[in-house]
Length: 366
Length: 274
Image (cartoon, rainbow over all chains, first blue to last red; front, side, top):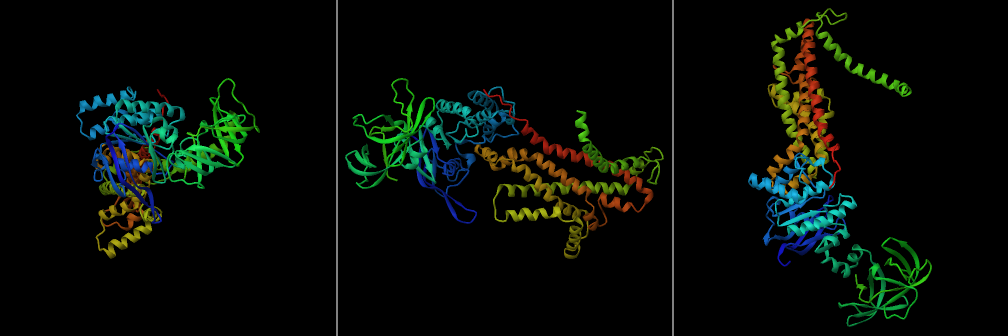
């Protein structure tokens, strides 16, 4: 996981608007993708993730900066000479060619000998479990099957990097979940670097080795799924990945790693390891719903806790989602697993304590 | 069931009337072309191949037919080529005068061809000083066929994802290979349909052609000039019958090609997932 396979150096992209103005699709930034990793570009539509992927594939030219694949500049290398292959969102299978011919296309372009081509096409179709459908046309396949053909067509070329542009976007939820697991397994099996574009944060968390969270043409945070979930760097990241409670607070003190913040009439201590915040600063406390616990009363604990009134309870099977209105007027979402015995089951309107550990709350300054 | 039929009766009557109105004149043409009389009137005088036999010996008429085929073929080829190129530009690229170009190139489609013919005559003779020839007729036919060709190819390209071309390049195809291996094969049905429409447009064109005809001319213009000789009229009917059959076959073929692909896409997706 140490060799860099794709390196973006100061890459930026500007588009010309129909009215003549310039729009920044990507702000200048560096990005390194390591050999063999499953790297995900995650963000809402228009965040620049597809643009980044298309610059890597060679379908778009960057406005500034350089892109290196295997330490070679790709600026003057056209898409058809780059050691990457792409899986398109709509699969882009050639409708006039059979499945076998679709998969063979890349090898034919590279003038691989006929006998070797046939073997490799067979192996690729075996890999995605589509053997037996060689003679079908794409329009005779289901969505999931087309998806596999698209994968086989790209992987048969043994690219250094496989680029995937929301490849599961067109599938229904159940098939999507199944394909996620399969894709992840396939990636580990072939050992090729995957660069995966998605707007689905659950998908990104489930599949990736590393994720770049993007918004408005910027890379907000590039890290492992766990780091991004547990230590979101900005409010956007915390909000986009999973569900988060944001609590307005004022900093009372910051001594060593422990910050004391004021929320309404209550003061709570949370861990904050960075610098740059000073007493009196307005900050935001971010905490995940599953890190919060409901208690009936303040039972003499050392843990930080907030007082509120239970406003809503939704039973969701594995867990229950509570909404607590704090005395400051802000509401908190609490998710508790439905365990069997001795669970505190408050009813709507009850006064409750919301507890958490100092480690689980994050202070965000943006 | 009978109730249903009764309710639909006005519909059936209407349909029958439309069909009669459309096809009776054509049917009459056929019938009279086999009638053993130079006078085109009922009652029929008996069956004859005579007019078809005389048609075989009509040299000038065959010359005009040959001219028509050449003009139609050449003009259809270039109209399809130019129309397809314009269609690609309009569908694929967003450029400055795109909408204006689209509107401008559609004008020949709605302009009365007699007006266009007059304009072309002035242009060719008075301004450029050309001798009227089959070449000029061909050029004029290209002009009137381009809009239809362009619109047919555009319709096909609209359903043709740009991703397909990108996918081809991603798989190592150069722009030329992409054109030959992906773009052309996929747009082939539309190109053929455009060609056939342009071919028949040229083959049938009279009003404009008659104005720019020199010494040699095409079939419709020649046929019209033959109407001055009543005794030869049945020969025209015989040729007319042959042309109608030929044109119908071409149009049916074009329609079949155009729809073959869309239906192939519709009866797709056998949902058998593993």
